[in-house]
Image (cartoon, rainbow, N blue to C red; front, side, top):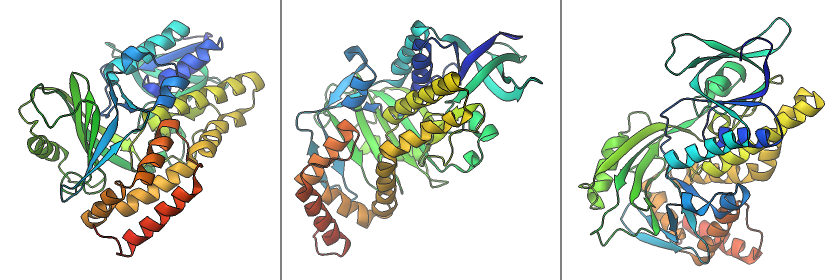
Length: 395
């Protein structure tokens, strides 16, 4: 790989965004190197919408469960049941799902390499050089490329080294435990996602119990320094009667909560996925947005390869924000307001019992766009929200 040999793209990071970018570019006949660290599994509830399944041709065998509804639990342990009418939330195990995506990229023609990204430099002739340390080696190796796709996670080294402002990305720190699903717990429903809006489990986010077939993900997140994520999960497991179940593994990592203002360096780097900050506020949903970001990064790289115009790299963010920027803005406001105290969380869970809220929420989630049908439903929701805000509605 060193010397005059040059790739069209080096994709740093083999999660959903990086694997998608690598696969899309390889299918177009581009020479791609997919550089990924071994043994990395992100803490994630594993929820994916039907639109992701359709848009990215995900086979049924990767769906370890299909949730048909959610149960929302308030600080006072009041419950809002949110059934999904005619739809589902797909559940995947990230270890199997991510590897399948990497294999698909390899089958499409991408070259895989296991190693650790170090830095980017430039040859005297201007060519971009990626420095990395292969797995099991102590010495750096070099590879030349036209473009680098930084898809190396929330604390992306590529982003911090090349894109101004990346070091100031806000995070929620997430932790979850994958445990064996119970066979004799009447309270556990393998077709339902449980979401806990309780300050004792997260002072500024939420905790979850998501079904994964034979296993489940039990997790929480918070941006508040010093908050004990592991003790919170221990308390949740005890309350839910799941404390005696076998724990198969556990992971923790930062999850970004706001897209960066720039996703490229104007020369030879474009970001995707967590590295670009595309995890939805309030919900923490990231897999769909990561894969879409990877696809848009691949489109931008392809255009650069065809035209030679480095301004093409900025198209990835421009197209993403045009499609989803409004959703991220609304969800950000929602998280800052409704998650700020248990009193507001109590009202939020009450709002979740409303049939209009449930229908529009699930339609927007499954299709990944703000629902514009039935404008009177939006009016009714607005009026009910206002009643809660000024204290007219009973909790």
